[in-house]
Length: 189
Image (tube, one colour):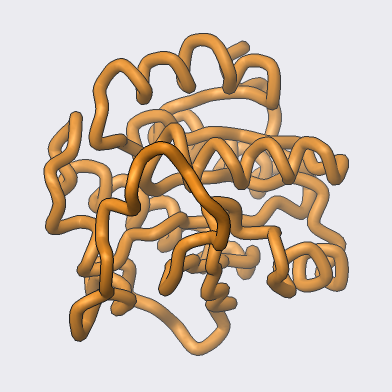
């Protein structure tokens, strides 16, 4: 479903746009993803709406068939890209799993602010973004996925999430569509 509505109190959640991750190969140009996510952050801030910037500094415990992509995180790995223009009012969440809600203060932070809808952007579409969207949906938040502000290392995984998974979790839209709805929401009496 294409995005139809921005709630009165939405929040933006930007997943893993950090130096250690954006330097890795991606299915779509990472510069465009960062540009779109930054534009969303600017528009949310201009309207005094919550912006949550998420980084990851560890992998979830437990055995998997595939080894972790990074055995040890190099210096600077968790630093957010400067294009996000992190502000003092932004909420930083450091996660240790794919999803931003697991064992973090994200749910409490959003509920304290009366947030009913989350707009999610970032990387990787089929991991951090999808996991966060699933959890947000299960917690009862309305979910919007900014499809041009996300990418994955695997184009097939990205496409699967966007085409098959996201329509079951919420609404999708482009950065432009989301910004237009934010502006129209603000213009209402």
